Image (cartoon, rainbow, N blue to C red):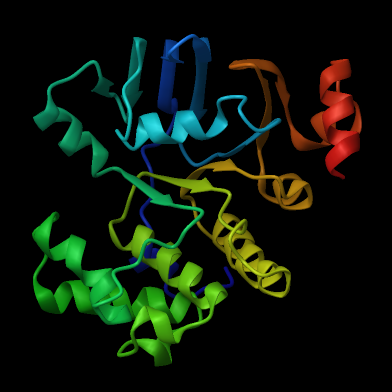
Amino acid sequence: MSVDTTEQSVPTPSSGGPLVRLEQVSKRFGDNTVLDRLDFSVDAGKHVTLIGPSGSGKTTILRLLMTLTEPDEGTITVDGERLFPASEKRRREVRKKIGMVFQQFNLFPNMSVLRNLTEAPVSVLGLSKDEAEHRARELLDLVGLADKCDMRPGALSGGQQQRVAIARALAMRPKVLLLDEVTSALDPELVAGVLDLLRDIARSTDITMLCVTHEMNFARDISDQVLMFDSGRILESGPPEKIFGDPEQERTREFISAVL
């Protein structure tokens, strides 16, 4: 293991079976069907990457899991508990098992880096301030920002802010970490550092990841399974060597050729 603080900082998900399951999930915006009776699952400890053209429904899946939008039909379960359909109270409880890193960093600009990491564990999980700060410092060390605790996010580079956002997501000890185009807002010279950090987390921990990305080399490196989306449906799925090396569908071949 390349990271000493992993065992204390990152959760071990439930063993065996699907951690996330979507069954017959549909989502429409007006006349536009974004997800069309979608079925798929993510097993605990696995890294699954969603690829496909813009508008194919990938980010909508992450937004559903974050309860930022609701499905029109179907059921979603996380760690064996119903997320949809469910009461608002139940959704909030299940939602604690999910962490997300967005395209934009979404850090609190008026708070220090340290407090960005401790605010939710104290207010949502009920941790003591000391315990939350101890965990936050471990995670900032993990992402290479141990010396930035007292700084405000605005004083950091974009790459550093995204590292803080990753640490903040992990501070809640989620069962599953959602990654939504986490390098799209970064200058090109900052992309590699953030992707290297995520590779390290993927390789040295058991955390479950569901990732939406256009970084195909990153997807190939970290994924146990890659799903190709188009028009709200899964065209094909398989291990990265199959999807990137010998895809079955012509649409997949066209997409891979265009983005690599």
